[in-house]
Each structure stands twice: as structure tokens, then as C-alpha cells.
Image (cartoon, rainbow, N blue to C red; front, side):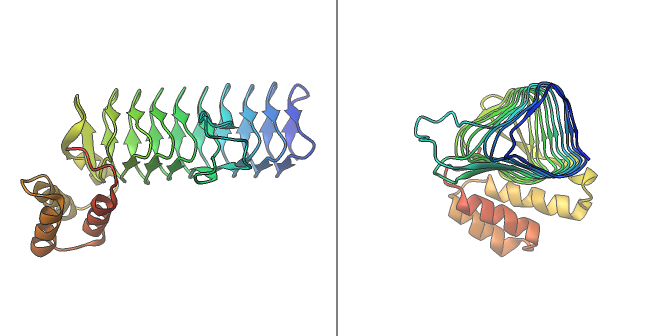
Amino acid sequence: MNKISPLAFVHPEAKLGENNVIGPFCYIDRNTVIGDENILQNSVTLNYGTRLGSGNEIFPGASISTKPQDLKFKGEDTTCEIGNNNSIRENVTISRGTASRGITVVGSNNLLMENMHVAHDCILGSNLIIGNSTKFAGEVVVDDNAIISATVLAHQFCRVGSYVMIQGGSRFSQDIPPYIIAGREPIRYAGINVVGLRRRGFSNEMIELIHEAYRIIYSEGTREENIQKLRSTLKITPEIEYIIDFIQSSKRGIVR
């Protein structure tokens, strides 16, 4: 049975699972689908197009599936899909998609800290930690297991790789490749995320292999020349293949 405060509004067309807790002054719009065992503290808004999984906790002032802050948006029927077991803290805003992708996605087991923003058509993976007041512009992609510190600004269309650590207060308009630390001003490659990789179970041998890959990538030469050198000199594991694929598919280029 759901526990719904008498001071909350739930549209009669909203679809709710079981054992949800909906606090006072929450607003749940039509065309919303909610799974099981979610906790919506007071003053949470689930706007049109919300697709919320199970086991999430959403804190006061958060607004999910908000109308995109994009002047090209013409009211098309789009959604915002949130996975399971996320902690979405106070005043987080997540916009729904536009005609570009039609959907904004946030995966599972993420911590989205206070006052951060996820713009339209972003695709966020799982097991992310995203700091206070960080802002993602439209169509940003973040792969799994990244840590993005507070007050980071991400330009539209950028991609962040897995197991990345981004320094607080950074701004970036190019892609952040996987397994690295990115920081300083202006933002640049600042080494391998050794501590994070060890915490995630990467062996010393794998960390050294990744480190050697980036020594080659950031050496003199063009992107393609360095990738060819990497392929010819290193063991190509799935981790190294991921780095290569990430760099080759980058449309904005990677941070230097």
C-alpha cells in the first residue's frame, strides 16, 4: 500500500506501484509511471513524462522531467527515465528530452547532490557521484562509475568516460576520456585515477597498462598516429579497447 500525504497531489492518471511514500506538497503529474518503494520527501515534483524506477529517494525541492530549457522544444511528447536506488538530493532538476533524442536517462545507484542540473537528452549511467551545483548542458553523456565534483560545468554534447574523477569547479567543452583525473584551470589531463581504480578492484598491472596507454595518447603525434602506436605496442584488453573507441568516436576531441 502506498502512503500518500493528504497534502500531496497525485493526478488520477498517474500510475503508481506499491509501497511508495509520497510526502506533503508533492506534485505528481499525468503521464507519470512510478515503480515500488520510492520515498518522495516533501515538495517533490514529478512532471509529465516521468518514468521512475524503484527504491529511489528524492529530497525536497527536486523537480523531475521538467520542461526542457531549450527554445527549440515545441511541446513534443518526451520522457525522463530514472532507474533504481538513486539518491536525488534537494533542488535537483532533471529535464525531459526533446525531439533530438526524445528521452533523458539517469541510470541506477547514483548520488545526485544538492542543486545539480541534468539538461534535456542527457544520458547518465549508473554508480555515479555528482557533486553539489554541478550543471550538465543538453545531450551530455556520462558513462558508469564516474565521480564529478561540485560546481562543475559541462558543455553540451560532451561525454565523460567511466571511472573518471573531475576536480571541483572545473569547466569543460571537450570529452573526458575514461580512467583519468581531469582538473586544473583550464581543465586538462592530470593523471590516472589510481585511487579510484584500486577501490574498484583494478589490479596494479591493469592500472599500469592504462597509464602506459595514456603516455602514448598524450605524446607527440596526431590522434590516429598515437592510437596506431598504442595498438602496436600494448596488450589490447577490453579496458584499452574502451579507451581507443572512446577517443576515436569523440566528436569534440578530448581534453589535453
